[in-house]
Length: 316
Image 1 (cartoon, helix red, strand yellow):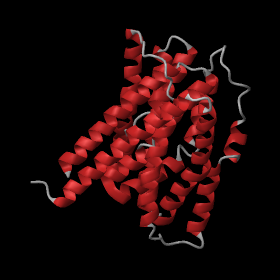
Image 2: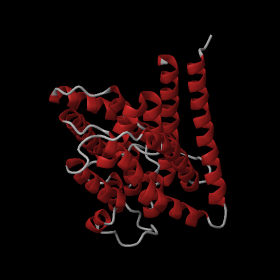
Image 3: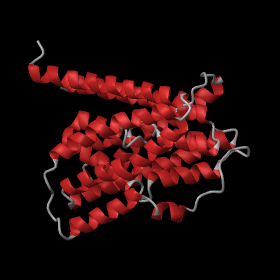
């Protein structure tokens, strides 16, 4: 017989999954409306300017900034850069065109560290997992991951794409609220807030809001045309997805072993997160093969979410 705590926990998991599905469906309905593009742009701006900085504030104000954490994050970020390089090499090797190459690179290289990463890390490893996921998301390849993804997309833009001139990388970074938030928080932790704070309520809010907002954005951004992929495309995409969910955590293990660092189990889940939702938005902006990105996002999300929920159910 399931004891009450386990029953309540399973109910919370089921409730979260149903909420994600509902938000995705609402996003699709909004996209079909006359103002879908406007809603998507405004919601993305609110997420970028408000939700991400709030999540960063929770993580950096509640975590112990010690040498152990720095070593763990250094291993994780080193492995992420290796994943980006491996994804680029793979895409260059197999892709027949520049838009396909860019799409495969995005699918393989960029994990959904926020919208799916936060709630999954919180589900599987509690507050400690959530803090690691947020810090990993905010440190973000040192340069914000969305900036790196945009540079990749710009270099693989279709000749008939609708995008304008490439945005300056420096200008994009200087205008980034998350980047400035992290800079301010680091200064605060090194000066007036040397000890971590107790902000459990804020952590619960972050864990509850970020996932639904992400699935709402997914519904607003996913192409609504039918699925039609040649066998070669599916095989090429399969390799990119394998890099995202299998090679990425394997590289964390390799880097950690070489560096002699004991990496928490949560970091392997964080490294294996599915393809980021923002790759869909960027692909649409720069005329990449967005249908491939859509399939990569949907398949990797389904696989990782299902595997995590099953693992939590078995382990719990």
